[in-house]
Image 1: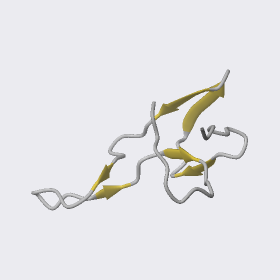
Image 2: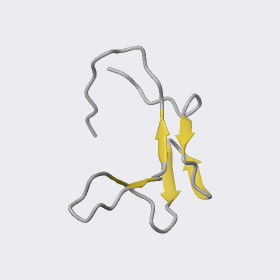
Image 3: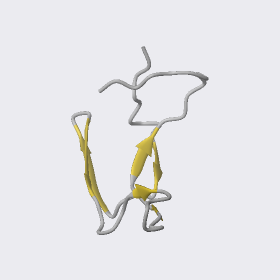
Length: 64
């Protein structure tokens, strides 16, 4: 099983306000941030905050 490593984690669209304490990440999102693509109305948004790790595994599953 893969473990999420907070020490090596990277931000994609880092938020202005966040905290990391006791292995818990809290993110205060900014207004109008999201990942939406090709909606019926043509709305697109690619600016949500993501904290991620890169891995060598080609195939994996994420279970929360």
